Amino acid sequence: MIPYGCQTIDEEDIAAVREVLLSDFLTQGPLVREFEKKVAQHVGANAAVMTNSATSSLHIACLALGVSEGDIVWTTPISFVASANCALYCRATVDFVDIDERTGNISVNALEEKLLQAKQNNCLPKVVIPVHFAGAPCEMDKIADLAKEFDFKVIEDASHALGASYKGKLVGSSVYSDITVFSFHPVKMITTGEGGCLCTNDKHLEITIRKLVSHGITKDPADMHRADPEPWWYEQQMLGFNYRMTEIQAALGISQLKKLNGWVAKRNQLIQEYQSKTEGLPVDWLNVPDDSLCSYHLAVIKVDGESRKALFDFLRSHNIGCQVHYIPIYQQPFYHHMGNHWPHAEKFYRQVISLPLYPRLTGDQQDYVVQILWEFFQ
Ligand SMILES: *Cc1c(COP(=O)(O)O)cnc(C)c1O
Image 1 (cartoon, rainbow, N blue to C red):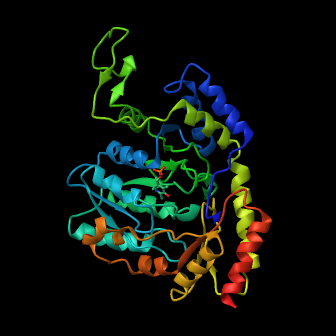
Image 2: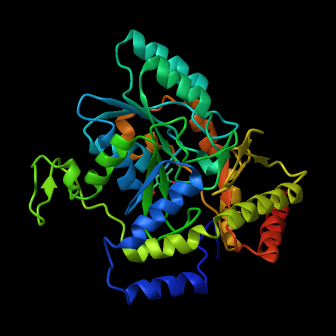
Image 3: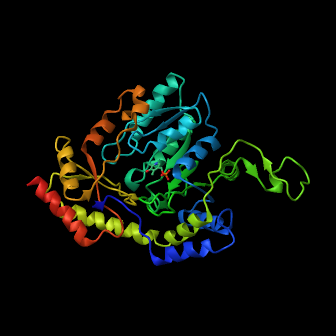
């Protein structure tokens, strides 16, 4: 089976992990800090804080922005469930904003309309979480304007978008948001096994995030309640978690990050091949605005809703591990009580299939996928 996505691990990655296994620290050593500096530098943020997943990063991001019971968080229904669950971990309520079908991203028009209504009903969101679907950045300048006007915070769920850029700045620079979250799950842009991180330019947020990731504890004497603390003294100042990344993961991440730019280029090149080789087929590709570079975590095509299931079955029966991204979150049994009020998300969902896309997908493999697509439509 050719999967829809998978990791790329080379000898250099393996050597880096082997080396850390033989070193003094498996956790809370120097490599996590080094990986944080390298990611922050790469994306152009003041700080990055590593965690054990994007899911825990989203949880921490909500907590750091003060999300709690009685608050409202909005996100897009076309995402992985973690984009919504993070609000519920904080006992907030979650609601969805419909999408722009051209990109699969949150629609800024729908967002503005919903904000105007919410203002009248006195139920504005505290936080909005746009998701850069497939690695194409959302219209962040407009979202940032709305955040100012309606006084909400923004968390970018950039799980797909490490290496993507928007108006000349890499996603993660967080110039249009309070916090940006990345995932290092194996199918994402780079991997640490499980892993994630938060990027921010706000020093106070960074300090809170660091505490929340590690039990709510600080070991920084300058930040303690106690004056003149003993050398063994540490302080738990809030209820935090153990969401830390290990040194083993960081060693892998540092090694993977070196290859990111090449992989983004390779993914873009593979997409161009797909697009030119499927010209003439009743297949649409997602729109990427001219002011953006898409990292292409996914190769999403749109077909007629009537033939999507048959195409999915046809591809799978030819050992092509296609997927559907995403089942709208409101369709999950856990979210069923919310109803079905997002017609563009609904239509998008009926049309999409993700084709295989990852840096070591070979030309032959890609040609085979294309050939099966042509066979299906003949
Ligand atoms: C993968 C993903 C997550 C969760 O990432 P983990 O690192 O597996 O926790 C969250 N949001 C989106 C959009 C994702 O694709």
